[in-house]
Image 1 (cartoon, rainbow, N blue to C red):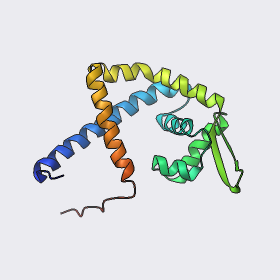
Image 2: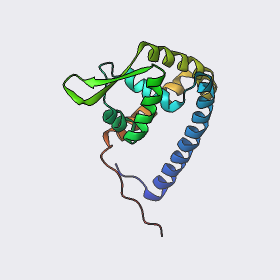
Image 3: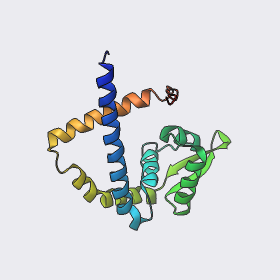
Image 4: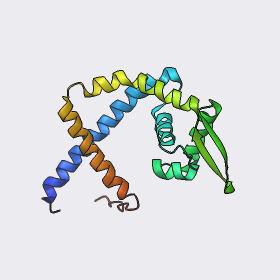
Length: 161
């Protein structure tokens, strides 16, 4: 695709600013809503990931999927294991590899987390009718899919002038 470079750069900058602000505002609100449950959006992200992999997954696979380092994932898993919402067991085919799975208690915690976040989700999207919300979901899903496909492509840093 060809774009008008100066205009495109400005539009991309505006989009990134808006997404950055949206991320900060929603993360702050959602973490506040999750506080009574003793979890954060980081915990819920990991629980959502485990919900989508009922066969279990490794710490390395979680780190790759969430694009964070393994020590950060291990720390989060330790906190969730201590609460009994995930299990960590040796892989049946390789005892050196650990398999992380969501427990029933983890599924229940995730349900409570979704209920706790619901009022903020309602507030966040109340200005959008259903068609505009579906359109937003489609646009965000398209950008997510593009970024997911481009995980191995990391742009080199730009030298400051």
